[in-house]
Amino acid sequence: MILDMKIIGANIKALRDNAGLGQKHIASYLGVDQSLISKFEAGERAISSDMLDKLAALFCCPVSVITLPDECKSSISFAFRTIGIDGEDLEALAVINRIALNQMQMDKIAGGTMND
Image (tube, rainbow, N blue to C red; front, side):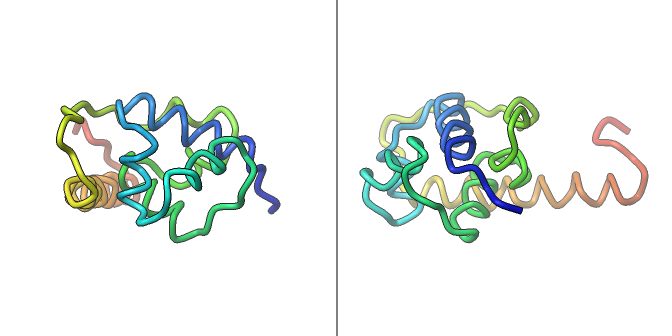
């Protein structure tokens, strides 16, 4: 499957904007320069699978929400203050989100839903 970098970039930007995060926040979380995030969002650079996994955890969504068109609407929304937030804070949030994603996957496998 060939990934469309323009779609991935647009989805990353939409998820980032929805979360109220700046490119610098995402860059700090991923351990890269802000200019690379700008290039990802513009579809000018390919993104590694490791970074996709990290972003999926941060935004509490499956990787497919980032890589596929029209999937971006299905992520879980969250809100927090972005003043003073750093890469460490985002890493902690991603760990919590990964737990939530794992629970949702287990519920799906077991035939239940989060509302049961």
